[in-house]
Structures are given as C-alpha cells and as structure tokens.
Length: 146
Image (tube, rainbow, N blue to C red; front, side, top):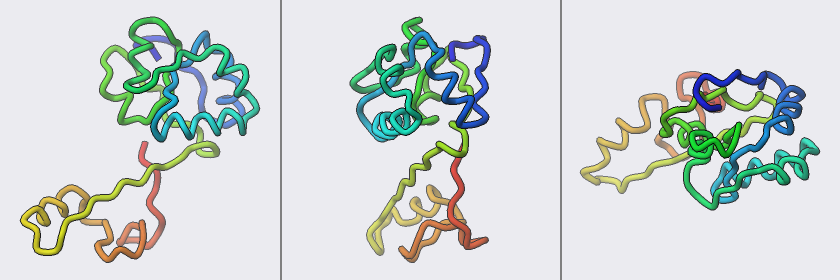
C-alpha cells in the first residue's frame, strides 16, 4: 500500500478474495515466481477476470513502484522485492491458506575457499547433507518467512 493508506484485512482467504477486486488497480508482474504463482491463485479464487481487467502489469522489476507513482492501490510481489521500494507500507503476507513459500539454495564445491562463507549465509540450522529442507533442531519442515 502507499505509505499511510488504510490497511486492508488480509487475515483469511475470504477477506483476501474480497480485498483484491475492491482495489482500483493491483500492480502485478507476469514474470518471475511471484507473477506465476499469483496468476494461478486468482484463477483458484475465481477472481482472475476481475483482477486482470484492472491490473497494472509490469514485465519485470518492482511492482511497488506503481504504488509510489499512484498507478495502483496494491502491489503483489515477494516480500523481499517489496522491501526495496521507499514510500510504501507492506501490509503483510498472504493468508496462510493461500500462501506459498519459496525455497532458495546455495552450494559450494568441497574444499572451496568460499565454503566458510556458505555456512555464514545459510546459518546453523541448515542441513548440509542434501537430504531435505528441514530445521535440523526440530526435524520439522522449514516454516515460511514473513
């Protein structure tokens, strides 16, 4: 949202489904992981036609720039992409029922001088045996980041 704008209720899939069509325009990207996921999500929610008719679509870049320019009321993109744009307020993550988690990985060659840096990037709770994406402290699947 533009900085200071009233925050919509995104707490459930039902409120999320109502908020999106109420926006004058939502800034979307057709490229990348967030664009692909959101295209499928609005189909699943049954609001694709309405959203596409009012969308401000960018081919690449930061959707939140369309909030700053006044071209859109909402910007849909990964949190890390929204965070780099000044002059906006991040409303929050999608409701749990419709949230998606992106997993990223890093690798180094055995004996590489960069291997020590790898351990600093991924942190102490990451498996290094290639057997899965789980927290080594609990054995539970990784939790989505907000």
